[in-house]
View (cartoon, rainbow, N blue to C red):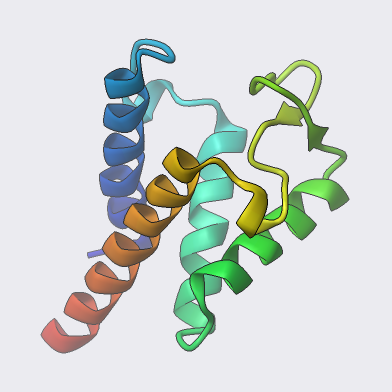
Length: 119
């Protein structure tokens, strides 16, 4: 299983969460903006390279990376304005976003462990 295959799995889970919350209709991985794909792949690589990092530490690294890329906090995600509602300290995220982060973290860590076991 490659990092891109793991990324597709977590992307689809994330899109299902958005659909469940009725935030917007989900799209397929193939139609996702390249920035979104890169962000997911970077997060997977970070967890792969830093297996002992906590979810909170992973979120902090995500925020750091986003800020360096010119993103700011905004009420809604906007690729055009480079705004993202999750650019907050972890403990200030709404519970729904913390739950989605947890789901992402657990699935990525589990698939990385499975891949290692199967090698």
